[in-house]
Length: 272
Image (cartoon, rainbow, N blue to C red; front, side, top):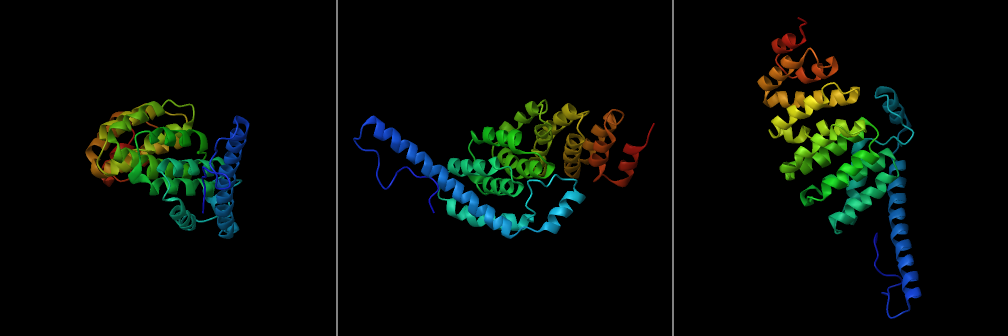
């Protein structure tokens, strides 16, 4: 199955005139776009075959999610389809695979996005320094709900920061983005490294920068990050919360202390 071609009809541009070469280049472009389109159509048909209208409605009501671009396929089935097709593109360079992922993301169909993020996750051992810019662009341009935000930030960007820990400070700049999904991503992208015991100081800086963010989902994002940190560093998280509890939104506070011992939870929630 060919997705990118450098030839047309088995011939490379020879000693033809410039007009012929230009025409052949245009034809090459058509071959590339046609085959990518065929790939997306094939994946979409398989996803539609697994769609469950009842599950689609459940997601709409339980998570208050806009399902206009949601087919209604459960995540394990999406990952199965993604894995099957990844075998067909695995021989291509990581840049080509990420480019194909970008085409899927551009459809804005929820399941297509999960396939794209799954492909990127499967390529995690091949990430290069330049790929953070790709993932940051995805976060800014294609994420529009908390589920795909967290999928991208944990399973792709989080893996990137494990591979390149010296780049994690980039999230500090994300905290001032006009796009609140990017601001949430500043916190959620650190969840995986923090689980591994990394970036505690950075975590606290991010939480401070997002402390009184106007968006509830951003507050929940950094609250969740503090909760993850509290498993390894309960004293540090408790101290952080106690120093800021008068200013800290209650939703973030409740998330942050959820894993602390009950006695510490009561102290944190007690009003002076």
